[in-house]
Length: 423
Picture 1: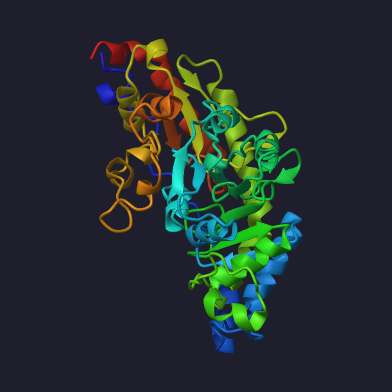
Picture 2: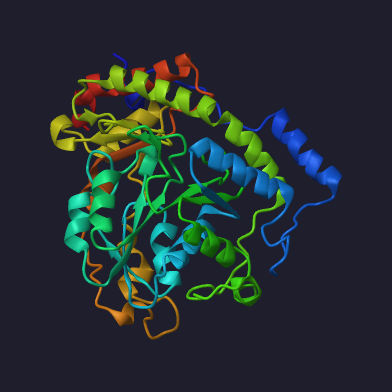
């Protein structure tokens, strides 16, 4: 008799590829052509002048971002990485200062501290949301802690009320990396607006994008000014602008172009229409997978709205008797591909293991005694090494039939675990 599972010769649930996520349409094409027709592709000047703040479309995007997210100041950047770097600079982080960061995110969220000579201190994550655990943050705070970079990973906002209360009582600046969470909410406030500064990404694979780009938001006028100066050659602007506190105002070229801004303006209009289908698709999958052995669908914190940049499942090999690797192979044979884990815990990367960044002397790690040993963040290591399965199942181009195939394939594997356990 033919084996039921495709990995053992059975018929796969899905043989055709899933639809790509496409958000660019005629609106973006028209906006880009309007910029080309204007011949003004960028209007930034690195001097204190009318063009210090950039061209009309950059400034238009910033005002639109402020209005949409209900925030006082938005500062466009050429990437979210640049936004993170600028936010750490604006926060006043300097050599030897400690910055508490997540170990389970894109590397720039931690590297941002290193750029200013800060020492990343890794706190552990919550096993349900995968965001930084407030309790772990509390345990990592010292008298050298200058900032905390919180990441709304996979689209779920962090437990920001507790984190902000903890930080404010100690005068610590909080930066929220909302690169994966535009449109997510926490107690009716948008992710990205919950901290002293918030950073959004417009990279090509994000929920909305303009190829490359980012936006930093804040309600603090001082932070906004410092972000603008770091973005645009601040060291040659401060004298004419009359800025007295010039700490960390060595400027860079983090400037967004007019074409990127024009495209981003059109994408921002689509944000809710792109997030709502993600939530609907995730809810369908979560209902369909409920009760399956060893499968824990994404959990959403009370009062939160998940943005579902990716759909993150926790897998329990003890409950199934089948390794995560083998389960993922069986699902792939059915036409459903998972990533096993996300990124290796950041502190296990060579820069942290060798404590080498700028120069051969170990700066900035030589300014402190950071611990980057394996076992530092046991929840993160367990999630990455054993439990997390990720896939982009929930974007707006997925049909109900596509989602039914996803659910059917996972259910099929779970109902036939004995076939895998015999291997």
